Image (cartoon, rainbow, N blue to C red; front, side, top):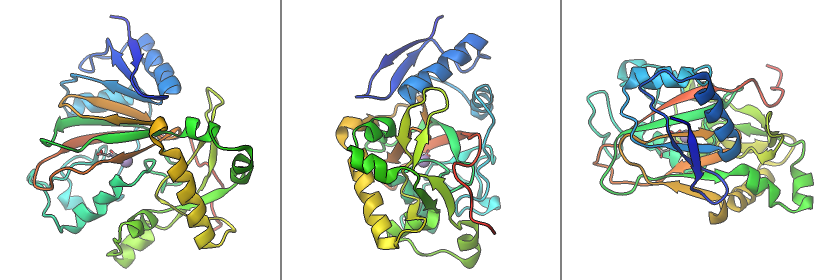
Length: 294
Ligand code: OGA
Ligand code: MN
């Protein structure tokens, strides 16, 4: 069956028909998905009844997997999924929802802020693939904002102000914004900031985009309050509804997004209900900026 894609969001997001992730993809299907990602930045696939192995195989057919070991607060013995997955669920190892005040849950609430995955790593993520295994009775949408359209809509003066800027990203900064400061010295060391350019150019389409994320908490050579105010204005601009697609999940949905061209955020849902969503991630090509000398 040929792959077809129908646009479902305002300027991003396509819904794909004709892919069955239980099968090995053909070269032409893989090419169609990459072309769809370049165009729509977010692709939605429905009714994909796949297990972890099939999600991994599908992910690997699109690129090299990024491991997500040691990026959260779960100890290795507390992992529910292998390190080839990011466990975006609210569940402990026994598949029970975390208690409301569990610090692993509170840290994970950082995903409710607009962000780009792994922008806190020197080589940040290319694609993220999120598969829904169990969803709550209400809420829990994931929203996506188009950073290409957001860039295009900036006035020339702001575009010029952004050009060449380098931001510092850390999970410490995103958690500070929601009042979560409860990190150990080891975690602070593990989460130390990395540098990312503020304007990115897509390697295939040549389109520029704003590389924003709530992990960004500083701009190199800028005073912190000025940097934070500037970044806050940009995020406010970039997440206006005209740039946003909101995904309402059904079990079996798999959504792929391009972290180089979009931001996303999770929306609230009842804390006592299980939301089992599992993310695999494709690594980016390399750093976006020179890092500070160690
Ligand atoms: C993610 C993420 C938001 C959500 O998977 O990276 O931020 O809605 N998810 O679960
Ligand atoms: Mn995320």
